Length: 326
View 1 (cartoon, rainbow, N blue to C red):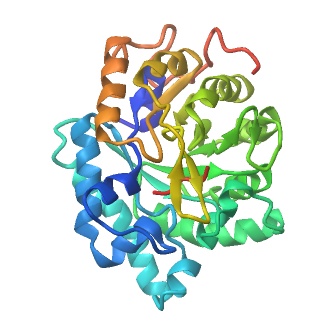
View 2: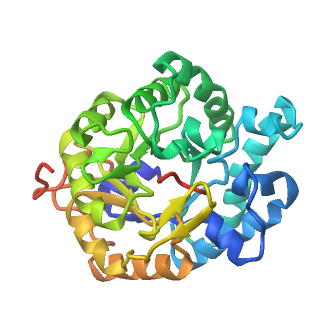
């Protein structure tokens, strides 16, 4: 079944933070490539991390390509041909991990923002001084390579501002793979400060986009944001907040308390979310709780009025309303 068709029927469980699962297994992710380093150095570790999330109940694995770019690998002396192989491998590893799940699962190929490649915390701010055209030229080659590897969906994630969203939406045209678009937000605005209604609007007319929402935000910001995304675009919502802790880019560490609770899932679902999971610092045990909450909330039931593969009409009650480290 296509992921879009599944979303027309029920919520689908996303995975959690890949980097924290790799760190829990003892891997050092302190360099600029973050988890993408292991694509070259220890791919089996990435496959094992994906498997842990599938075993916890995740139905979608997001690949280790968030911070994997031609430019970033070039700084490590890895040429374009080998980078293309590693990007393709990121999809293959997630696919292999899901083969033993014993149920239908999907693979989302991650494309992080331009700031992730810089590895200087600018993915939390956006506004890199680049035009939409320049950002499109940066994103398109990687997206073409990821699409050629055969994922079920492209995850355009942790987008900090509307210029980059427009560039990404242009870059996925004609690739033949659906996509979701998710912003990193602060309150009711993007990280760059634009109102979310303005930020979500370009996705409404993008035929490639099957879900719109937020990720790597404070869990408390998620419900209002995903409700707005569903109302503005008329598409299923995607929501996968981080733990609620804050990333200190200078110290390369997390600060503050964790505030992600599986009990918040019912509110996200009611607000229009159909892809639900976690981001940074949200591990397999919490994803298992998310899967359990969705099961108890009737996740296996059809959405009222939806038929097989019918378009999503948004939640009946939706009102107006930090960079991912994978």
